[in-house]
Amino acid sequence: MDSPVTKPLAQDVVWLSDLHFVAEGLIQGHDPRLRLRAAIDYINEFHSQSMFCVISGDLVDLATEQNYRALKSELDRLLIPYFPLSGNHDDKTLLRQVFDLPGVGMNEFIQYAVPTEAGVFMCLDSQRPGSDAGEFCTKRMQWLDHMLAEYKDSPAYLFLHHPPMALRLPMLDPDNMENGDAFLDLLSKHQNVKHLFLGHVHRPICGTVRGIPFAVMRSTLYQAPPPVPAWDWDSFAPAAEAPNLGILTFSNGDVTLQYREFCKYEFGLERSKS
Image (cartoon, rainbow, N blue to C red; front, side, top):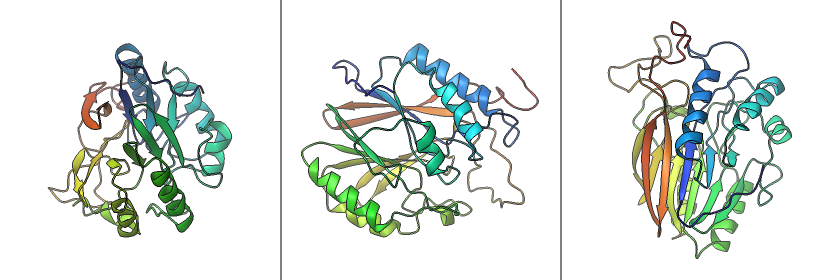
């Protein structure tokens, strides 16, 4: 995978999240291959001049080599470079084995920095193996602290899978980052942290935490219902909402996020094979 090349007239980044890809079969009644192909076709048609694409975790639904290799075959159709993160459904060893990652990172974690003219993009590893909840351990904290200090004169944009704060989603908040307060304390020390981009909960949410803006992306595959009316895991059914990808535009430290619908809700459903 080539290194990203910043184009002066195109300071855009494409953002995908929660692909839950499998080489065969359906997930929650949705076809992950059709949904991802639709997203890639959309990106190639309308955003082939973007700097790169970030995928904020849960690349696959079941972490097998077959699923990762089939996913890589799909993602390699992108006309722009792409950078994957690790989510709770992922396996770090397989992810690193199958995908090429930038050299500015950690060996033990899927965590690395991508410096550009628009700022430094930090892809962070919030996975806690064996748990749906996330964490950010001492080693990852030390790396992030060092990198934020090293790039103190550049705007820093952070991508990670698990939200470090509660999002008022009762069935989903328990699976956020367990030591989120410590993570946010670290970010508060660095004035160059400009925005957080999060996955995991399959809902479009935005706000601020500790004065830092954040945004959460919909899943490329299926969406979780809103908190009202109330639901639990026994009654869970995906919301009847179309998937989105994000188009992030960076200009002089300012950020604009557009949620883009790349296919209709009915596309890729079990009852609609086309």
